[in-house]
Length: 360
Ligand code: KDG
Image (cartoon, rainbow, N blue to C red):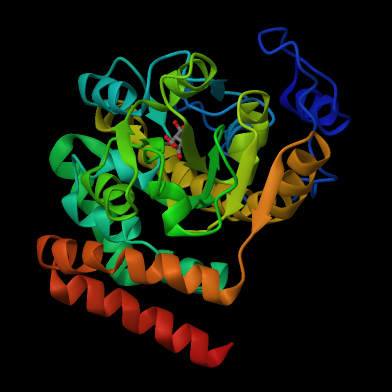
């Protein structure tokens, strides 16, 4: 089944994979950009690149990674091919990053949050309400200060190729509508038990809000929600929809409390096997796939929220005052973590945000 055919069916809302047995709908997404650039006609070797991701086939992450594969295949006359393994089927983010180090997996695309175990400074992206707009977030991701952090993965035998967008995180839960930090903490009831990514700053955020944060790999979240082990979780709307969390979550709150990037990364063992011409092509293809993924994630975001509402999730939109109450409640996270992450780095990124906002 060709990647283009898969994507076409996905866009028509068809289900390709019986694993979820739920029609994986997608919005009327933009087609991938035309594949341009020189074709490498010289036989520099054939390689099948295996990519493990945590999200579903209908996610912007999966669709853009398929496009990454199409670029490589088309521009090497099929000598480079890519197989994408979704739904955490090869492991969770932490396990797949370890597999890159041992060379048992070629690529994975985790959020920055679990990747802080390799590059601690990436925790800057876990700081709450850091990016007022997507434009400010992308300006930071394109900045030298952010790109320099990708280079640090080489100390761990990982070649980090590009950032793209996981997105603005929203809270969902099965207990009650949430429009204030008090609703999270529960005044006369216990605080919500919220699953977080395995990252200390994420834990601090939900502790500051009076929740009971529970770090957990992404692949375990649906069953933990279904069994009532946790009350809620937080992810972008597109992830909540494509992972069917609405089947086990009644309430959503448009908190936009963190903007999480993804990182496209390759095992250095795979990278080192590749001819320099292939390496150059892979860097180009990663940039093109990243740009396409950000476009898809942008198109998906509000559409997914509206789909969730249509499917019965009660979504609370928060006004400026209500968001301000959350921002004030999580200020201690900056007090605790800015010195840990590095004052200079945090300030440099806040300065980029400020200059972007003044240009908007
Ligand atoms: O493949 C990416 C997912 O595994 C994960 O990073 C998504 O934001 C995420 C989460 O909540 O773990």
